[in-house]
Image (tube, rainbow, N blue to C red; front, side, top):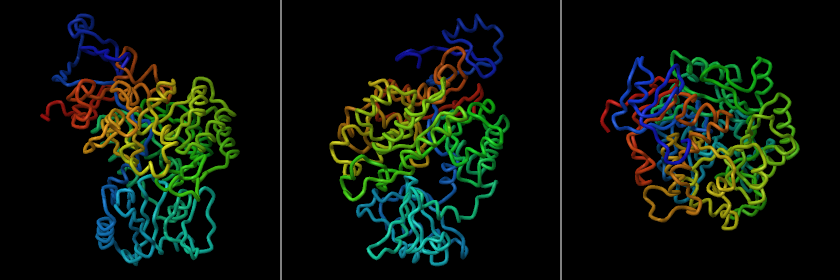
Length: 522
């Protein structure tokens, strides 16, 4: 990944670092005392793939909870909820993750009364696939103190019917009112979820992930302790960069932490700030109203001025910012905040998602020290319904990754798991083809397709740049970390539709296999 089409026959490593690359015989002559030789058996090795934005504990939770993401109709989802409810004791919470009404022919969104029928004696909270909306039944709403006269919280909406009654549909910060009264997860559950996530990620060929979890599980210290307990020399070697949500920034500082590495595997990243919601629930903040709902332009999580204040708070402690922006107005707010308070020298800000990028904002992004965290799989999940939300004019500069790269804006690749599958090969294929496997068209917005080299760069050099590690990670070159993703096919030289059929043969982190499938057949 130094240049397109560069490759090497062999790699010599010492103490977790690449020392030299070249022909096997030459390396054996130059480094006569070689303790171990690993034959890749015709497999192909890449720099370690890194997911530049996800929620690792959230990913682990979905693996342990009721997963609703695969349901294609409302009746099937209802049956699964009823089955789960039958297994619970009275008063025990029914938690589900990942429903998406856009997968249903009728686009049905469950009403609280329907959820009451499914589980009349259990609180229900079902988080939408985007994690910017949720459904709750009457018991859960009562426990959260949500009723007809409850005002919308700042940055959130309690959806109501024509009589002003709450429907159980909660957008963005409104869902947090219910989450706040859920029973807290135990330390054991936290560690089990994180362990499950790391295992799944290395199995998919990932050597690292930039994750945002520190504000959701009982406080900064408790959640960070789970990462320390799971990711270390004894249990897992894994490169986890931890974004610091602005709401736990004070705890972070009081405990004496700062931006940068904690040890060889854990590091603290940028300050995470949400500017808006998501297109699915129409809470992404747009410059102009939604094409299919002209009465709304989305939700601003913070006012323009408050967003600037939060960025300044990060700057006061010499930290970059990572701002979630999906809508074009949210992106405008974020750009203004980053322009008003420039990132400290030697660091890079991050815009997470950047789904709608008008030409005037691309010019301003290019002038900033910023990396955009893209999610290629969003094209597969969001089209064709996103066309209804945005209309043709805005769609021409949405999901515009080729344009961003050609204009010189630095980008990294991610899944936003558990919102999308964490498999980097799925993301790489989506970036190249921009269509689902069973679709025969030329791709959604085909002019924005990436080359295989550009797509792989998102998950290697791109992810490294986003945390200022471009001289240490993301390439197979002397001085770089001995982190490798080993595949049974050269994904640069196969049909793009076959990329997700590729098998991971090994995942090496710090010169050690964390997943080894080299001796198994396909």
